[in-house]
Length: 241
Image (cartoon, rainbow, N blue to C red; front, side, top):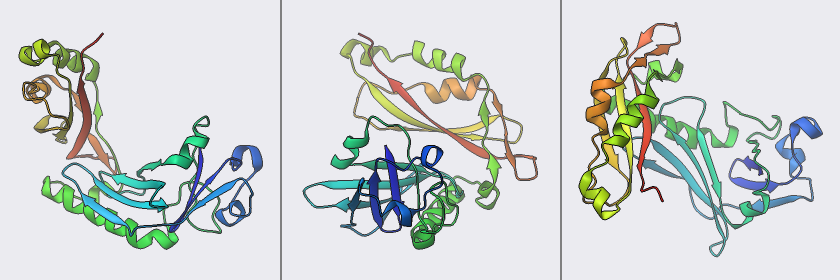
């Protein structure tokens, strides 16, 4: 998929690969015949989640809605992006995506978003508030290197071996979001587990195992010093065929 997001206008295109066709700006991309324009049909919406903040808007028509969302867990220049809808399927065979927000900037990552300045500021404000609620310093997380889980594989195996017996007998599966607070010395000081699916018999021992066994290289601030930070991951319990 080659996708171009321009301010409040979403465009899907099939030919704008900078590596193959040179540097392409949003204004140049709009001139192509191989582009599908998707006009916004809703306002921007900010979802203040417990573990992440999501900025989203729908494009296209009410019958064929396309979702554009940006997700952040810290107030940084980077973000996760999702673009989904009927037109996106046309470009599913290609895995590359390009982002263009200002007409005179080549399609690539843009730190300052022009027409999206206000929505992105709201997204950063959301993540700042979220980190403060976790007892972390938002300013320090604007430029930082996240903690690295050194023994994740062995801890994951230990968690898997403790699949709750009641859930196993019932064939239940579940997905959990786990958030850890990692101290400057690499120790895990707290663990929060949030279940994303309904499975009454499935209560994960992940926090207990992780708090006891996990080893982390701590996060680093802009100066290269260890800092207090967080680590988020997903745990999936699923029955194997």
